[in-house]
Length: 288
Image (cartoon, rainbow, N blue to C red; front, top):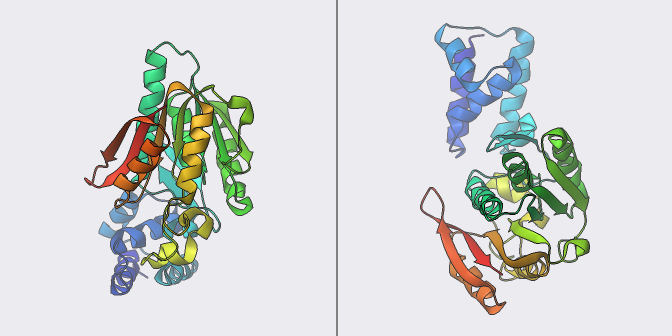
């Protein structure tokens, strides 16, 4: 069977059910089977490459899974985040491209601490999920000491694997627990706290089937108003941070002012909203 025919047919089927990245997903899944990059798959299609029966059957099976709206990252077991290749699967939140912008804010804040004279600044990721923000901070600022906490036992399996993978490249420390009372021994010693907490209101069920059916509820929903975990993040960060320490939090693009008012009420200074690369409100930073 021609690889190009199978990929094109899958892309058409994906598009028919509303998968926006139809062609990309079809090519990436083919690459997963063949051990090729997306560009490598495109090159093989151009030269008229064929699949043997076993390869075609395996790829058709993956296409059926994606057609049912199972996330691409669950099928391949991998999510890419900045310079990281993270293990993901059922039970852990899939890191989003927009969160790379939030990680950059935290990385910049660590760099500011280094510039100000801190030789080994401490940073914390509250509710780390797959470990995306924590490991980005750690691997891109190897002189920093990073701590992260994840509550979900299902997610922690993947978090632990990702921390173990990058353990030799950075100083990243992981615990399983609740962000409300985590890291009592770090009170008043942390330069940067980052978090991408659950912030969807309970009544606002996501439209995307990949999110609604496959991302864990614990990582999605933030109580009646979406702010319940955000309130805990604010309180824990104030406990952990040094005076002048920086908080970086992600939020939905409709929640910027809500988050700003929450932080101002908690006594934070220099509370600033930030737009991501798509010009949507994405994060708020604040100074203790």
